[in-house]
Length: 456
Image 1 (tube, one colour):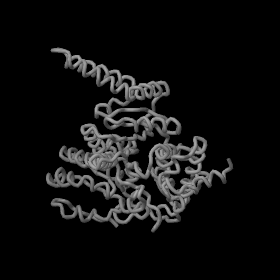
Image 2 (cartoon, rainbow, N blue to C red):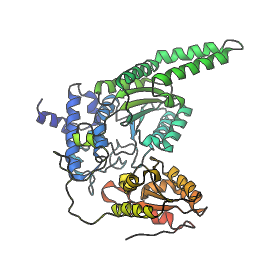
Image 3 (cartoon, rainbow, N blue to C red):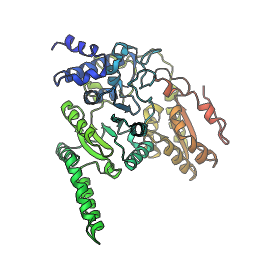
């Protein structure tokens, strides 16, 4: 098939339902075209390149397996949803990505009926999807509800709160874990996949229930026998599969699956859809930046990138020689730390974005990246301050609002010397409403013991 024919494939798709009818031969061709279109547009408009390139096959498999007219997908954060936008009726407008009046950089309910939940901040997908699953059950619906969450977003407390309640409620829900960090050797991965796939089959799950019921019916010793059997199963699973954590949350675990093997993805998504008695987690391993060598080599740099040359991946200079606030802050923080060994730097998974990577290079023992855990970051800083240190917490404006209670209760109420350096304050342009730091003055200045400064 020629490139022109392949190119027409994407442009011919009016509805995501058409992806369900594509052949096994057409899907890889469409994947290549999706990557090319994403690279071309992001190189001009900027955006989240590496995350979206890494889930092209996963997106195709989801839309090939599930009916988007009925079933619901919630993307966590949403910076990996470019392929999804292209396949849900927005290909003709995709060149307007992240421009005024154009396609938003994140899923937005007002933009498309296929954007089931608006996102932009991490770790909300499981909670939102569980709410949708409960609403479905109350309404007597039959549709599938899926949450697609990355391993980075899974570090946040809300993700675990969602897992905990989902396991407790036992509702039918599919969580797809997009894991692009953890490396599992082929042999262990193959054995793990075989075991989790086998243990997930309906007849195996039914036999397990029958055996446990039979053991419990034995007079006097039945409960102990059932407990020993369950402990043995847990030990077996934890030794051979990485899914013990999710089994502890009462999820059926399937994986890990190669996230770039389309036939395997479709098969295991169908298997996950067949689990009817509770939530299931499908563990998918992907390569961030897949299919574009510069992004595969440096996925951190290409996570969110400005204008660049598609052929080389080299950034195109903006022509603006004015130093950025972030750059000045990072250098100044290092200078202050050289004079005060009580000064520490804390960030929530954004060392490059906040300029604290310079501090990390110079004072690694006094630098902490807590992951996507803003609430923990603030209370952790409060503990340091209560012990005589001076922590500097660098977080984006709209991310810091997630830790409002901790700022009030753990820092200000106790009059602790924590310095918050709020990045991305004000209107931030292309990232849209979820990232505009327009409320920080309003939500901070009225708190007793808070001193608010606006550098210029």
